[in-house]
Image 1 (tube, each protein chain N blue to C red):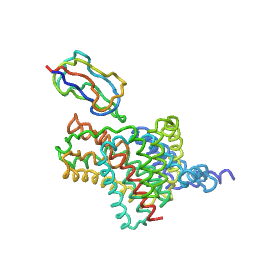
Image 2: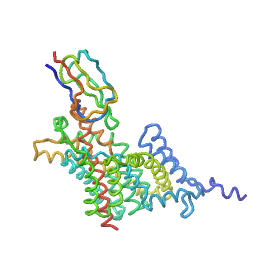
Image 3: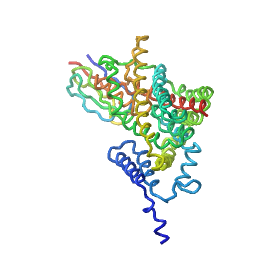
Image 4: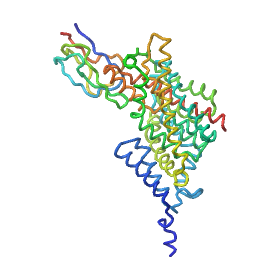
Length: 73
Length: 367
């Protein structure tokens, strides 16, 4: 099953910490969103494999945009 | 001989030397600890130079810094210009998405009024008590604006107290926030507000300026400039004015603001026991404001199923955006996947407006 990782708060992508194909576990840090000069890590919602990443460093993201898709294992 | 008689060294007093220490401490904190450096650095330097005797920098009618002070602060030019820049920097989106959070910004003004009454009962005049109370609003330009109007002799102390406590928000607020909330409350994840349209954001500053100024005319200088700056931002057609208000103009007036405030703090004005009370009362105001925002959020939760995380209430103490960042940090300590930052910006910005209105009310009653 594919799980979408949504933007929890608007900002810009500070750094993406995983690559497509990486195995991830629940609560792993996937990427960091910078908002109001604060770095906010986004955590993985489930165990699985990163199947798609839709953002890159520097992108401006709005609430509820899809950041990446995790194929649940 | 004339040279020696005019040499400052001989006119030096111990109080002046003590003020050097205060000025140097502020400069030190600004440089090494990065405590509000944009303000504390020029303030610290202003304190230092104003306490060098016979320099006449602050001599009425002729001194260089006196002119900055007179035309910038006494004429009430600089604080409204800072508000123009703050308006251009402010995104009202968070507030418009959840208008109910405005009440939290209003609740955080409780500290202002409680402290006003306490300071008055301690023997400060009404004007002085109002100026001290407004420190609890944690808004520098508003504090300076009110002090210049009501109690200019307290301006330096109140401004330094306000800016110091704002710098210390990450130390002052978390213990109060943890004391007044349970672990379960800190873990509350809030529902996202509705989407705010670009058109609403254009209308907001226009309507807000009209409503607030019609209700509290004495708040007009600050509110008018704030909302015009915000209109520059949201209209998207005057990017050059928007950019200048936020950056170059704001930086220019900040220089004159900082050094002038520092220069009001001469030893004979500053080294009095009232100043110690001002610092204590200011801290007290700050703490009460933090607590009252949290308590109102808890109270509102009694009547709604769409729960508010009470930590967000603490951000009603303006100190934008530091207080909102602290809310985010404390929230994430309880639940690392909880993002309160944007929710906290609502009361945070409402707190700024609330403090300006509180100042406007003081001015209209006491002037």
